[in-house]
Image (cartoon, rainbow, N blue to C red; front, side, top):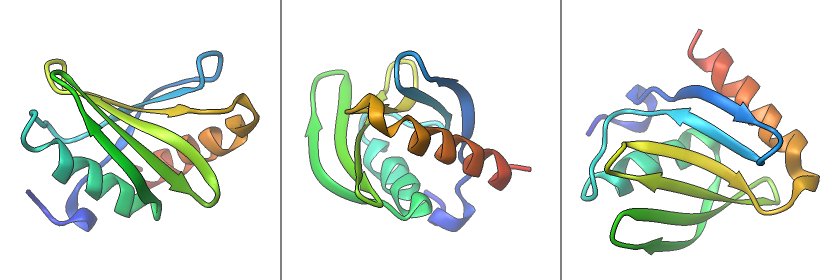
Length: 105
């Protein structure tokens, strides 16, 4: 696993209707999800509040500047996304999408 500063994240799709930000991430599997997810949390300057791992889905509750959202990862498809807990925070999700896009340019 590379250091957080060397790990690249991007935006696949911002779905405002569903309150989801689908992410481009390094490849991960069940065992490496935590490393990739923690690197993303570090890049975002967020903090982890709670972690849950199921058979095929990882769910982390994270806090970004007072906005709580779910960071979810499904290792079979190597899909990772942020999901809002409240539609009132859609501006925060749009900000994160814009910011991640700028990082990858």
